[in-house]
Image (cartoon, rainbow over all chains, first blue to last red; front, side, top):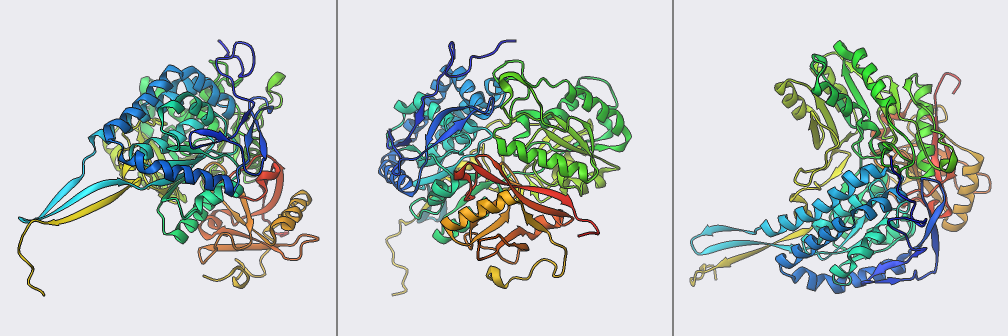
Length: 507
Length: 131
């Protein structure tokens, strides 16, 4: 096992600055009202930098800078814009370790994950949208032999993006890459729990972007998020978060008649049919890993497979094996390369998870393993750690219906295909789902019957660019991770052209 | 869309569904001084979902798709604080009593208390015959 030195200590691969202002127009700008807030690492609970506390004045300034940059950036040839995205990817690849440690320290997630997933995925995402842009074509419709409709893609202009805290760099990338590829300028507000790592990212790539194309305004939702989301001067708002804020953002957008894309989470079912256990082989091993995926990223994933539905024929055996697999999870210091589960991102997140363990027990859910805060001691004493937890109960319990956003899975059984689909779809949300079976027909029928935007089939928690990701039902609007996200950041311009010299004859 | 004051509660004569801790009431008093009358709307979903969002009264437009769980009375605050939840979410929560508490934290979303370094949090218990 090896451990990365904590940022700010001897031997650290990266260091944060002691303070971050807003990044506006290609330079750091102090907050208009002069306020800053502390940014603690969830690893120890200690603050490691302070962050500008933005207000409406700062947001306006950032929107001004973005408007200045949007025109020239939108007119930059596609090959050049794609080139910038590829250079960003290259620069990130050259600094992969630093970015991984930066995100891990700020968010509390294991560095094993940021090294192998978050940052490599972000790098690939920039490359994907560079390629998608180069391959994008407008279209033409031949209305008649002298009349042609041309369809051009045009950027929206200035867009607002509000980023969640569970994957601070990757989630920012999911939004930035398509928006920049499409030719927009961006005002981005990181989550107040994870406001710093995106600045470290910017410090690595700032020279590659024209000033004002990406602006970062920090602060709290009520003070900086609201003026950004409600501004009449942004052409679109993209948000990942929860439903009430999603509604509020749609409400603001409706006042300005602006579009939104929203990703609002879920309560994803992970379904294990009896035939999974017909052999003790690689596939069963893979399925058990798929069950244990609820603990990935401490469960702080919108698509956390937080409801496991196990068919009755193999229910006890599979659940026992899944429990044993869960108990092998290595929890510890997020900068240890062997650590599989690190810290929850914030104290309030920790408290919320504990409140769910409480109501789960009150409702009669059985705790098969875990069920409490993890006391890891030493320097991790003040950090926010929760034991990976398996609860057994039924789908009407609140722990089966709400996104706990912790390393907690709620398990129940099902009798047959129809029962599985009924339970799977008995939820307000429809972002992700998992189906595990050796039977291709069952897999296909289940995948089509589940009301969710992404159905992982004999896999889980893969997020490759080029596979559309987004929600059904209350899980949101729009599809990220795919070329179709370019459309969400573009207008369609139709030129309807007549090549005929003849008048119509009406007048 | 009916204004909050005119909307029926979920189940008239029903048991109390929502309450406040003293600590949460103290935060409500401070926020009211700064922002005026307040409202809660219970969120769901990703990230800070499952947390109650506190806004200036009327900031989030409620409508027929919402249920008013109760009006929270706070000593020293003239107007009660309505607590809302979407009806679809209420269908899954209706068997539990909710207490708004507050913990140190950063919060997210547009909830008003986050800049103070605290976050409202729901603690739940089962409604039973004594309610």
